[in-house]
Length: 420
Image (cartoon, rainbow, N blue to C red):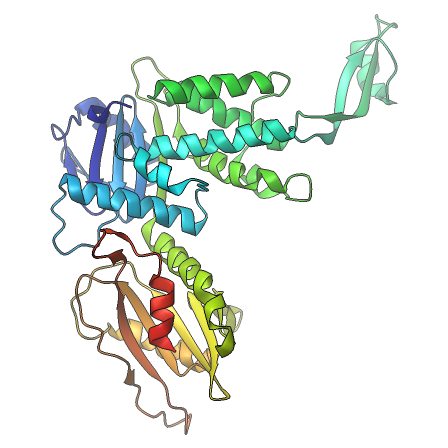
């Protein structure tokens, strides 16, 4: 992809017509896309787009807008900052399970010469190629057809309707074992979208080559709820990574229905959810290094709170120290704060978590921009719950290895060392 086709911005920033090659035709199509999604991803201003907390990519015709995370005190949007956060976003997506990269270093290198969209699409093509080499899955399905031979069950009503003058045909319903199933149809539709939208020649060519293996398979023309019907068993488990990528491609594609319109393909991720999943996965990876503490890291444990309502912290950590079991609840917060104290709302929320989950330590975890970690501070003793001592703290986690300028892959272990 031509680097001149890529517009790099940061979350919560603004992009006006005339900046970085962003033209009125791109703006108009983005307005329509925003209307289709009820303003979910960004806000429209006068001749400008104001981005929200979603990061990722939006391709509009011949332009790709790359929206990067922002958690830097001195981030001025320069080339160095862009490369730093491109690598960070890619690793976060990988660790969170949104994208599977077997050769991460090579993928990071790609981002220096191309957009994250190309990395995403290449990853999808690699997953499809692996499935083809292993053999595309076959499934049983019911087929109705007007055949010259009797095959399966005769559909009398349709036989009378279509074959009253053609006694040599039989309108039947039969079972067939075919590659033409929901799994492969979804992959084919995603490949077709790539061939129609990608601005990178080798990606388009690879997608067309892979489509040759899907000639006997129809394109998916279903509804979004079809993705909920996908079940992964022994035969289809290998499809899981490819279908996650395919779902993002298909559900975020807006074709050009009229001549002159710009096609839109968006791959956008809620940065709050991404940060939560990333932190959980980094802690989970380090879990095995604390076996002597019987440490366990679990995500989103729900408990009944009131009537049918439940509450759940983002992460629950349990461990033992000197034969005493400790519980810590964590809520991740992707935002930059300078305050020395949490908001009243957050304090009340963490208090409730402690009570409901029998935890003595609640942590509000933020990305660090140089703030000092002051440790935990105890809640006052409750009149109702005598003897229950518990505390809350704000913890600012340093995402980057300062010496190398890349995500610190040991942040999970470093945090658990601090905690235990």
